[in-house]
Every structure is written in structure tokens, then in C-alpha cells.
Length: 337
Image 1 (tube, one colour):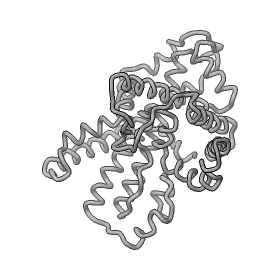
Image 2 (cartoon, rainbow, N blue to C red):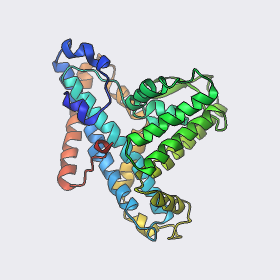
Image 3 (cartoon, rainbow, N blue to C red):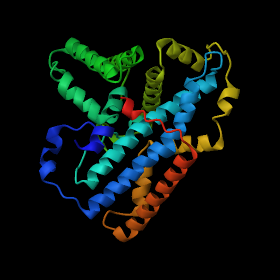
Image 4 (spheres, rainbow, N blue to C red):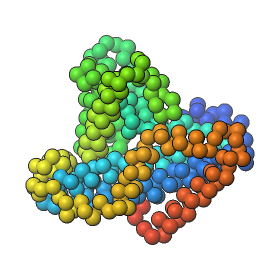
């Protein structure tokens, strides 16, 4: 009945917190650390996700005759960042509330938009959900222990279930099959996938020494993965399959509008939207965390770190209050799934 986790995730198994239920400590440091983590998640949700939500929801509500190529791309990109900062924001808030009560939850997102393959993406995206399906469905089905054919079948079953997990809609079902197909194509080598080692601080260490050629390959792999995820989220966001088809057609200039759609997109391409989009792009990478660590210094330098963290937390809280006071549009999409 622990309300922060039940309402906002991440998915937590009993064995993960069994010892913590009776053997934990509520401390000032934990409350302080939890408060900062909560404010980080709140900022993601209110300041970034909600700004992206307005553009995404408006574009996806346009009729086929109104939807041009540019406006379709604006809507698709906005939704990609809306759903990430919404989901990861709520996870951060739940993890922060857990710290306040003395609980330690596992991370749920690990910079998924820097992934170099779809397999890498699912190691980073909604980690608790991926882990749940792996341990309670994929492994009981046999995992990868019973030959190549059964391994591919098991992956399709898992991603079919992942789609249905999100709702009884054909768009969710095809979204799951789409990701399952990409994973299968990567596993059989039809789509080359960059191999990475264990993730550390958002990065996956390459299995071979980095060179310029391999760096270019990784950059191309990240671009492919991001676009593949983006197309999948268009299908995920569409209300019906015909709407998804019309949206894809518009993205490539074959929609009923037949144009670029400058007029429709102009209302979103304001300096404020472009600024928030830039913040979202940078915020979805590990670089802000690295810069923050460099500015604040090592963990032991509390004299230097604490004032900066307190000022940053207060600034985020004030900005969130201002955003909520000036804009009543704050969709709760995480709760839908």
C-alpha cells in the first residue's frame, strides 16, 4: 500500500523491498536527497513534458487535410520527448518519495534516446517493465535456451504482450509487434547492431576500442534507433490505424494536405518551444549530469554542493508553480498505462 510506487511506478517486486519494509531508516539526508530527486522529476513533467504535450496533442488532433509534413514531424518529435519526460519524471518523483521514507528503488530509465540499437533501447527504457516481462514471461517461455526459432517466437510473444499491456487497441498491438520485429531483425543480423558492454552513468562501453570509424558507426546507429523509436511512438500515439497511416503519409509528403504545412507548424515553432525542445534534447543525454557533477564537485564537498543544489531545487519549484498557475494543461499520460 505504498502510495508513491503504486501510483507512479516503477514496478517493484516484493523481494526488492522485503528487507527494507522493516529494516530502513528515515533520515534528514534521505529526505533531502529524496526532495531533490522529486523536484527533478517534477521539473521534467511540468516544465518539459507539458510543453511538448501541447504541441503533440494539437498536431495529432488535426484533420488529414490540415496535416502537413513539417507539422507532422513537429508533432512526432514533441510526443517522443513528452512521453519520455512524463514517464521518467513520474519515476523520479516516486524514487524521490521512496528516499524520503527510507526506501531505495531501482532506476527506471537510463537515457534511452542515446541507444545504439533497439535491444539497447529496451535495456534503458522503462527498465522495471522490461525486467518484469523478461523474468515472468520470456524466461518461463524458455528464453533463448531452446534454439533460434523458439527464441524469436518468445520475443514476439513478449512484445505482443507488451503492446497489450498498454491497452486493448490495434495501435498498441502493432507497436509491440513492430518493436519485436526490429529486435528479431537485429538478432539475425539483417539490421547491424552495435554491441555495447554494461551501462555506466548512461553510457554503454563499446566492446572494442573506439576509433573515428566506429564513432561514426555509433552515431549512425543512434540516429537509426531514435528514428525507429520515433516511428513506433507515432503508431503508439495514434488513436486508430487509419490515423497512424495518414500521419506517416503526411510525414513523407504524401498526405491529403500534400504540402509542408508551414502555417500549422508556425504556431509551435516559437522561441519558447524551440528553447524547451533544446532543453529536452540535451536533458535526454548524460551530459547535464556530467556538467552538474563537475560544477558541484565531489560528493564529499558538501559546502560547495549544498548551496547549488538548494538554489537549483528552489528555482525548479518556483518555475513549476509559475507554469501550473499560467497553464492548466497538464495531461497525466503515465497513469493511462
